[in-house]
Image (cartoon, rainbow, N blue to C red; front, side, top):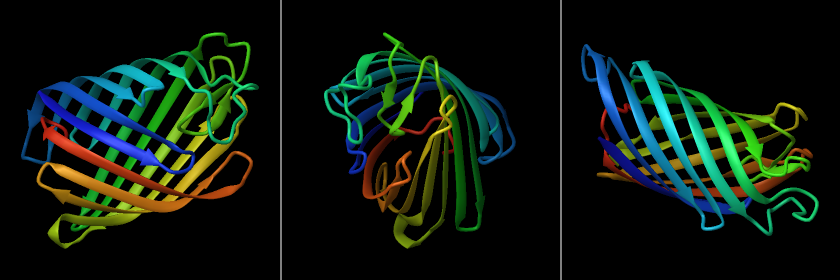
Length: 229
């Protein structure tokens, strides 16, 4: 069994949340502490009081640094204000159901690390007649739309458990083809089971406008389990 908790805050689009992740893994094969394969099921809970999600996920990692997952997510939003949108014109509330598919890859050479996450969400929401404002990507979605997200982190380990790198996040809606992006410089400090990450950079909206933004994440890794990253 493994578990971890996380709190995060972003200044633009403004938002924050607390996450928990509890999972059970089964080892499929193992050659050494780096090369092995496993399957893992997990339950994830996320809340910001006005936005709440519960997600059941199944992961398959044929090798420890490359894996696929599928997930089913249910949530409810009671937002009255969402930065960049008029919630009288677009849907900022309602119950939400997501079918999720994703892929995670992690590579390392000496002190350099490259991590890439791909995630596709098919989003269904109550009263699908109107447009749906998605709070993380800051995109407008339509009926049964799909949202693709690509996250890449490249950086280098430093002394005393420090890490510095660049983060790029690109999100795109299938129906409208609109996209948003984030480009941040990030720094992370790890102290035993705790990690603290801060970042600053720009967030580009679907209208092509750049906004200065910052990011802060604190994570407690209670028990690692079989996950390599």
